[in-house]
Length: 309
Image (cartoon, rainbow, N blue to C red; front, top):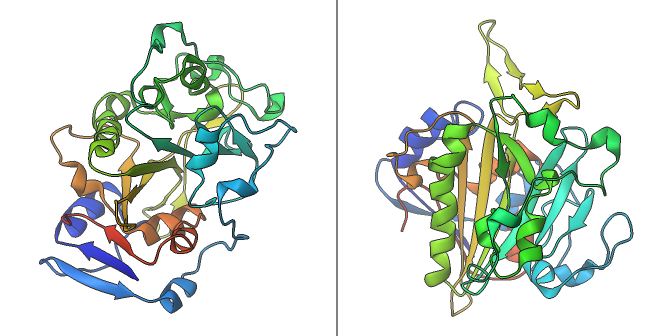
């Protein structure tokens, strides 16, 4: 069973921060409601089809022939792969790399209380090129220098304190996207902290993070996808970022929270729930799929949008 909880915050939050690209055509009541969605409806959603992957145990190597490095990255893929292109594994996360845009399409990690604590020290870490990516298709530190953008982690360094190698791996530029400094250091940082806090209340916490490149209505009345590129390697600057959080409860129920933030300065006082959106919006905008794989693992999925508890 797949249920969605939503409220008036969807209109005020999403329409302001995400715009017409995600949800301008969606309408919801001003009061909380619960809507049941059938598998038939999900099958009619016009998203990019991909082969289904049941679990991380199906992943034994990453592109380039390297072996899986540990059980944590394997466990992170319990709910399957949003896409199957250019998969790479690290100590604590799995990523799909987008060589055209010189950044990841998505990064998945599993958060746990023990993983959030440990001897790892960020001062020993340096941002570095990913030498598993062809030199034509990788970002460099020089691309970011003087750009005005932060090197924004997708899998946050603070999520992987349990092991110095695990934290070091988060500093590969393949785990980084150009991020507005105000966003990176404030609202987005708050969202990362919130995800870590969820490990105190849920049995397992899985997080998928990635960039979005959303269309915008131009004066001629047409929609265009426009985004900046920077540096010698033309690293793409996302228009938005998404974060999909999969939460497991003790009795097997699964809760889903999906966030989108614009890659612009965001008022730090805006509640995080204002940035909750229906998972379908992210699936449509990104070309990725989440719900079909999740439904293979549970018969009880509750999707929370803005205002839901």
